[in-house]
Length: 139
Image 1 (tube, rainbow, N blue to C red):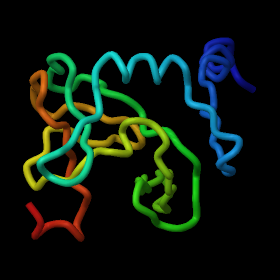
Image 2 (image 1 turned 180 degrees about the horizontal axis):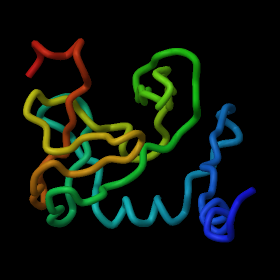
Image 3 (image 1 turned 180 degrees about the vertical axis):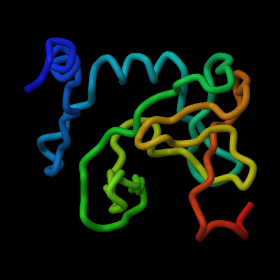
C-alpha cells in the first residue's frame, strides 16, 4: 500500500502527452515561449538553416524540448531518443530544435528529448549537438 508521500509524488508526475498523428500535434505553449526567448533560426554556415542563441546560455542550462510526432521511420528531422528499457523513440521534430546541426565539437547535448548546454553559448553562436556514432568522422 502506498503511503501519503508516494501518493503525492505520483500525482505530481504528469505523463508527457505523445503525438502519433501529424494532425494531432500541438506544441506546448510554455515550452514554445521559453524556447523562442532563447533561440532563433537563421542560415547556417554548417548546413541549410540552424538554431542560434538569442542570449547567453550558461553551461548546463536547459535550452528546450524536442517536440513533435512519434514516428516509426527515420527522416530529416527525426531525433532518436534512447528509452530506459533500451529501445528507441523516434520524434519527428516540429519546433525550432528540428534545425539543430551536427558538430564533432558540440555546445549542447540531449538528455532524453531535452536539450542542455554543455558549455556557455554566446549570443549569435549556432547551437549544435553530436548526431551520434554514425557521424564520428564528420566535423
